[in-house]
Length: 70
Image 1 (cartoon, helix red, strand yellow):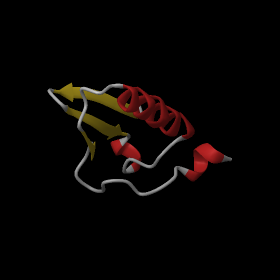
Image 2 (cartoon, rainbow, N blue to C red):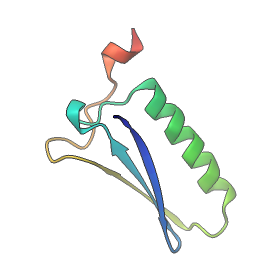
Image 3 (spheres, rainbow, N blue to C red):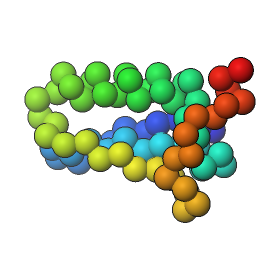
Image 4 (tube, one colour):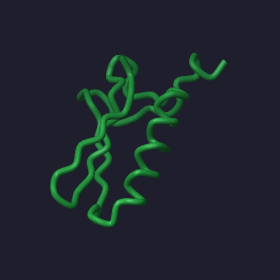
């Protein structure tokens, strides 16, 4: 399963790319989820910082999942 997970710890929001099988390559759905989470964060005055992280240990993000954009 691929996606973007959101977690809030105090005033810090963490967005975690979760597509390690494809080295966190971004799918159309993941970009939509990022947009949705960022809109939520922007509206929340309690959030002071955003941390972008990723699952896996091979790569942070290899760019777009070109198979998903065809």
